Length: 114
Image (tube, rainbow, N blue to C red; front, side, top):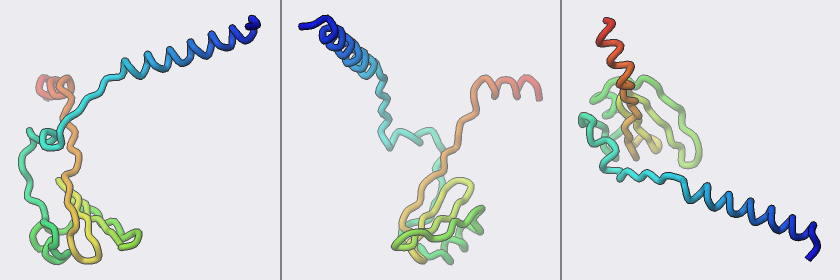
């Protein structure tokens, strides 16, 4: 084996070894879906099959209406706590919006300095 081939083989092994080490050191955090919003207060949301008129009657005007896209046409209504997905005139899905928690250090600053 020539020195050049040996050097190329050595560098290839170093690269592969480095990649293997980096991927084996990655942290894998798994949170079951049922546990993700465990500490949040329950929120009433529209149920599957409700009409747009019924949703407006029960929950009021949405803060944002996103027009229908795709086939079938899927539209969205955003409320403060949740987003409603419609297929034509019927609710097909409803999800809670992400509500970031206050950073503990920021919360302490606001309590100390009103």
